[in-house]
Image (cartoon, rainbow, N blue to C red; front, side, top):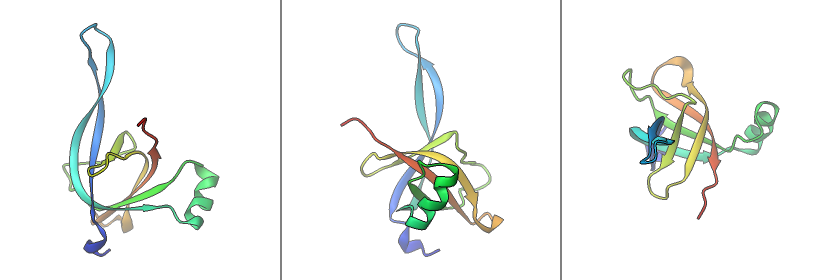
Length: 113
């Protein structure tokens, strides 16, 4: 993995629940870690392979391993810092199980403009 390909700032966020002024529960996303990443659309072959498992898979986000103190899971989401694009995480892969690089398979969520 070349560090020059990691040109996007990605913030991984965790979901929690809070109460609004009326006492209703509302979801709140809290920043966990911000890192440099490569964000790439899934290739045709990856999309075809993903169709057997999950038809929504759209992007692969590659980052360095965040360290032992931070664990990214499908319960998190990723937000691209420069344009606010949001990705729902489907799986996180520890590449070669070496705690050096992680690949996040994700679905880009369409936001209301």
